[in-house]
Image (tube, rainbow, N blue to C red; front, side, top):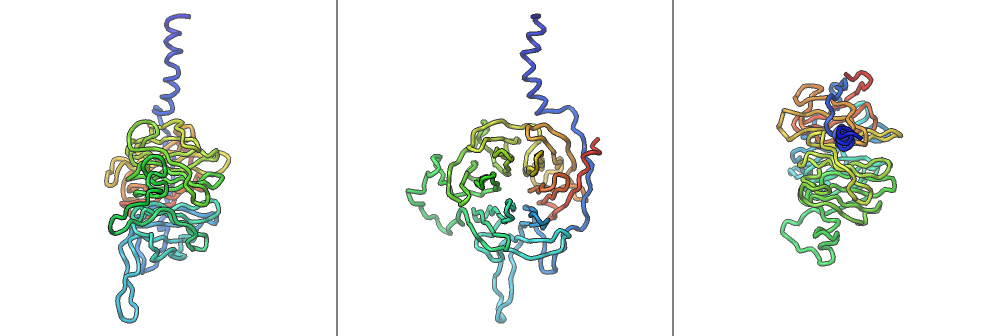
Length: 349
């Protein structure tokens, strides 16, 4: 074997790894956006559209940050609503109803997800709660707890229950929720605890992993979370500008460093799953904004979009719904809107 051959074989693994992380040319995927998608009643206004999800019937759920609302009862003004609203729309965009109006845990919206049984889950950063609504809109499970107005010591039995100094069911500004095929629940407990917590389908705490840092398995704001059909867990590690992949028990598998700051991640259903990741790169930063379409091994198939305020431009995408691989919904912070995007991957350039 020549010296050149030995050098080539030694470098081959690096070349293969680099091909997944830094592709020379990424195709642009053409797409369209549906104008005037959501029809709001006169008394409801869209705030920061931080959460968007669809159910099996095509209904659209939006979890939005809004101001408080007042109503009149018996001639007196009364406070009726906090700063977050969960809204449902028909596939046509017509308003259907508001869910959870006045509920205790709706304070500062972060995400909304719909599980395979069409239950609606909201993650509320302000109340430190995850709330599960059934398809009829009734609360059927809560996880976490709204903070007390004054500090109250946790019972000794709950402190450090996770083995990492953080009680398993005490969240600190959680960001997202996902499920595996068995119904196990995964929560990205993002801003305060920098971890992922795993629960069974009934909400019983199982385990947690992660801490603040830059090493594999550590996080700097785990901002979004999704699972694939094999139960692997994908975490948008926003502050570290990477996607991390774990097995179902939290063992680190790999990371993708080629998609900027992943504010929102989504994995499509179906026999061939795709991964979408949004590079919002910071609220108010208008230099990025593209969405990447990827294979689950990290290979980028294409990208689309840019930052801006016009149709087909994005203002800090905070959540992606990709129930249909070529028709996705995005919720935007700075543009206060939801867009439905129709992708044309066969026309990618």
